[in-house]
Image (tube, rainbow, N blue to C red; front, side, top):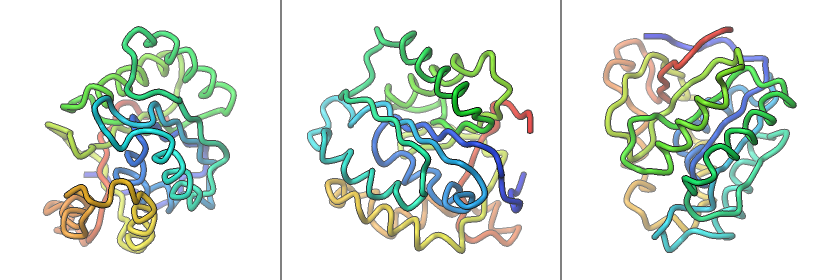
Amino acid sequence: MGKMDIMFTGNILAIGGHPDDLEYACFGTLYRFRNACSIFCYIATLGGIRDFTGGEIRRVESEIALHLLKPKKVYWVDEIGIDYGEYSNIVSELEKIIYLNKINLVMTPSKSDSHQDHRLISDITVSALRRSNATLLFYPTLTTIEFNAKLFVDISKVFKMKKKALSFLVSQKDKPYMSDEYLEIFNHDSFASLHGLNYVEKFDIGGAFL
């Protein structure tokens, strides 16, 4: 198990398949780093296909939530769902973002996920990093099937701020996973608790060059 207690001081690109992915999966970690690094966000869609809440309202809600991170820039894709035919174009777009912003840490969804948008953006991220020496971290989402956490980030002191960020996602408030009880479960890990960590965000390491 790895534990990240030092502040990262580089440039981070946090990639989400949908609005709310970053808020739910890695907001606490990003919030801890917000004053010591430059944060960039890339949101690949405005929601998934057949999600009736998808659209502009989700962008507005997420922009308010992500503003708490003081990001340098948030990149938005005005689409519902990821078009498989756009794979190579999205790879090229991410390559440019990574190069222009001198990104050296990237966060993206886990490959082992039941949602097609999460699987695809994860695969696209790996392709976009093939010529980069940036560290790659995978995070679990609510639809992740299998996850082998290698890094636990203690977010106990910023857990309330994470809940505040999620409170701005009003269009999602009636979904079961937005309840306090579910959020407590998602950010708790029995193994991490043995090491004194109350609330954590979990990551798998896809490549580390720090």
